[in-house]
Amino acid sequence: MAKYSLGIDCGSTTVKGVLFDGEKVVDSRLVATSARPALRMHEVYEKLWNEDVGYVVTTGYGRELLPEANKKVTEITCHAKGAHFLGGSVGGVIDIGGQDSKAILLDKDGNVADFLMNDKCAAGTGRFIEMMCRILECTGEQLDTFSPKGPTVDITSMCTVFAESEIISLLAQDVARDDIALGVIRSICRRTATFASRLPMQGSVFFSGGLARYELFRSHLEAAIGRPVVTHAQSQLCGALGAAILGYRFVK
Image (tube, rainbow, N blue to C red):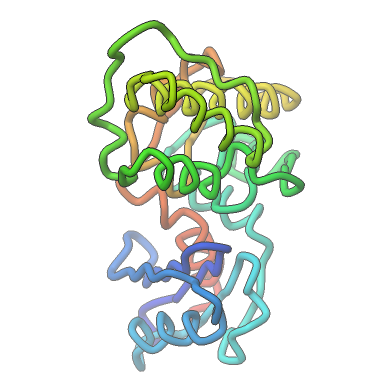
């Protein structure tokens, strides 16, 4: 008798995999997508699959790329299921991915009631933060160490190209790196809050995706939204977990 389901989420920047036993995450993997998403998906599949896996569900941009999958499900549905599992009775989900952002309204059972997706511009996504870190010569892991050094800095350009020029100009004016980074984060959180406010979310909001790892982002997003924002140590695995949860129903 099979014991596990396997969920794999192939995003634009990372591929995540989760092995699920119906109650908890048994094992997981995360690798960079790079330029070969099908290869990376199969790599995650090979690392996690075993003879006790009864069902495989894929999601994300590359969900069609794994022939071994039993089912392919949209990332909206999977993020909703994963967030409901990790966050409990949250009213909605905000996911900031590598190249897009999503706002999902949930019903009381964690099902999708409505959603919005912003995939037209890199502003406010993980790619935007990668650009900022490259110019500021820092890593994402340093974000939670940043603190204000001077007056508040507002980044007015949310187009990636213009924002890059604005950041370089601020550096030329000897504005502290911490203040520039905080300005970028505030701008992203305000933009995300405006986008998500188009959905009538109630109660707390679950923050998923790679940027949910950073308390600095969570706290600024909470301030911008004006309601509690919760996250989890496994927030980055949210889509893959949701896929595994959906797949577990078919495990026999």
